[in-house]
Image 1 (spheres, one colour):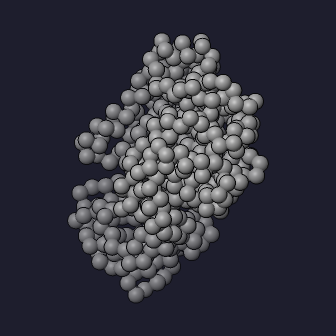
Image 2: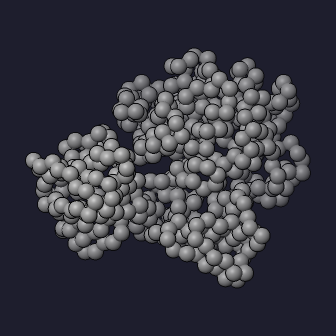
Image 3: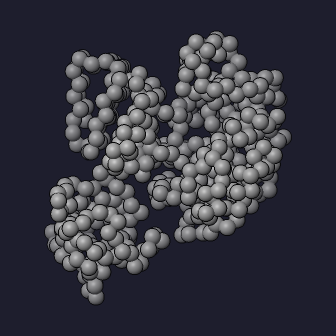
Length: 470
């Protein structure tokens, strides 16, 4: 049995301002059809005899993962929720424990959710080539054949062959300087470390128990004391907090004597920066990669992306990154794209929220867009999915006015339940117990005007919630 394990963590820092903590890059559509997360899951469906995937995701992203799986027709996935980020070694251990429950001999295909692969056929072929070595107990990683010297990736040095396609790993090499990277490419015996793996789930647990026994024991306890919640599996938060933080490379792969590598050329990118996205994408005749409403004059080798209704216009510039969202605009030199994380660090240090939230905030029932705000008022555009409802709730510090723009709203306000059609409105007094539901088959769109002494999202008392947040 071949089980895909999709690692869907991420802090949303490297592709700011589009990627943020509450909407990291794997859930964004950056290249090709669908989001990176959806493309990763779709690639696994090309493999023969593959089963439903196991997803390891942050609790904050659980509904994003579930919704995006449903959008691509995946209804039988297991979503394991990490209560805290503990790096890849514990995350893979969680997936391995779930896999051996399904089948003690299960093979686990470990894939980060935020990578881009342009050549799916070559990727599928590489996985099939790795199956014999993984079946024989090797921990197989996939090495990307380098097409340029790259200082942003770790490297793998190949040793003697194992069968027809795999090689024993001689050593893992940290990110090199440029001169060393050029030597690796010229040598021909080095591959980029992709962070993708194939092995028996039981073998991984065995190796983890040998090289990091405290980690395995803590993960086992957290998994065993977890519980189901709606369509998710919640790992015990207190137990998981005691799990050591470490990567699979440091915890297992660099210590085991059974590490193997299968080289592959599959147009791979980890999309680790805006410059990496520019490098992997399509370009116009001037070398520009453009998305959204953009206009260029005498502009070359630049990435321009407008994610709002505002046009980006550039004149007489080269090698720039210009990315616009409704609440932030990034302008950077392409060679400095790795330093975008420093902007995020400054936002955190100053107590701002643009590193965490977009102006449009996604919720399990839909989304809201904060259009305008003042000292005692806030205006939002709210979209509720067909059949979805917000929690039954009240506010201590604000009242709300709702105006339906399109669709039908079912409103609960204290003891009353009534319907509102397009162009109708209602008032929710401060302290009233209320709920908004979309009983129709099309999205419900409305404008909400909040007024009061405090308008924060934490002024919500939930009495009942179909998403388990009460």
